[in-house]
Image 1 (cartoon, one colour):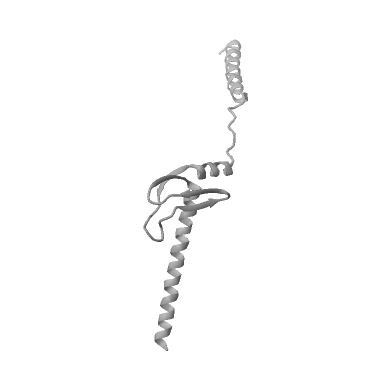
Image 2 (cartoon, one colour):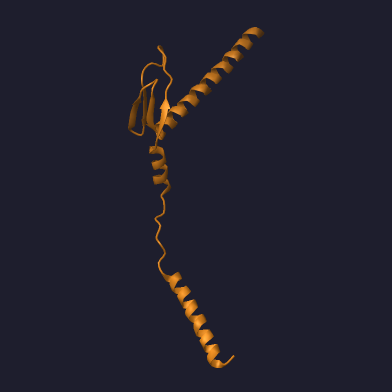
Length: 118
């Protein structure tokens, strides 16, 4: 290989590397970072369909749910679109009611057992 051919090959390699470098030095498409709080808030604002239990005694009136000042009155017995944050509050309340009922049953069983020992 002659010096001219080596110089051309080197020049081609340099041009190729410069072209690659130019693509690397161009500003990349800027992607805005997603703030986790904004993403979470957007998720909680999504609406989902629910239907609350209804009877003629204790569960006949609409359910009032308030999340940080965002209050809604959810009718019972019909399918309704409600924000996820309100549904989460309802689910938490139901879980708390279940835990309270279980605790009351346990305490009643303990009391009944203690009466039998007397």
